[in-house]
Image (cartoon, rainbow, N blue to C red):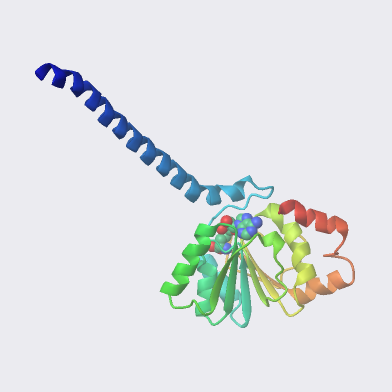
Length: 222
Ligand SMILES: C[S@@+](CC[C@H](N)C(=O)[O-])C[C@H]1O[C@@H](n2cnc3c(N)ncnc32)[C@H](O)[C@@H]1O
């Protein structure tokens, strides 16, 4: 009997050891999958042709945007809305504000923050690629982009925006549009553009032409 127990003990130990191994592998595997699911949407923008990573606007930058739009009202869009700080701040100032953002985690977080701060009725967030949506319905447009995308975005907005719209560029100005004014300084500078100036140029065929070549350029960013 005692000899039998001696034979059985290593087998039982082996079984419980392999169970521990399975649990450890499962936990490790699950953690890696979860880590990938969270990190991938943050890394994806960096792997696109135009690398536009999540860099949140500073408090001074948000204040400069709102200061630039002080006399304005109506609809507002933040293109690449990140964690929603500009959209939420604009909604608190009475705008009907929307954000378009590629990263679903940032969109879910923005929606949660809008509810927590009581502006979910005037702040909405969409999981979308900025190159695949039209901004024609917005009278105030905010963009915190990177220099490599500003020429194409200039063409896109010149085609889409109504002449009564105003565009605010954070940190990096548009390459050919002439700003009406700037607000703030250093990295918090924002450039304010009146759509009247560029939509009339686009109607006269000198900017923002919708040609197959232009469409191809926009598609190349998507
Ligand atoms: C520089 S951050 C600006 C965030 C926010 N506007 C702010 O000022 O705090 C740019 C954001 O654009 C998002 N983004 C990058 N490529 C995008 C695309 N193709 N369509 C929509 N959003 C994009 C990034 O995930 C990032 O959150």
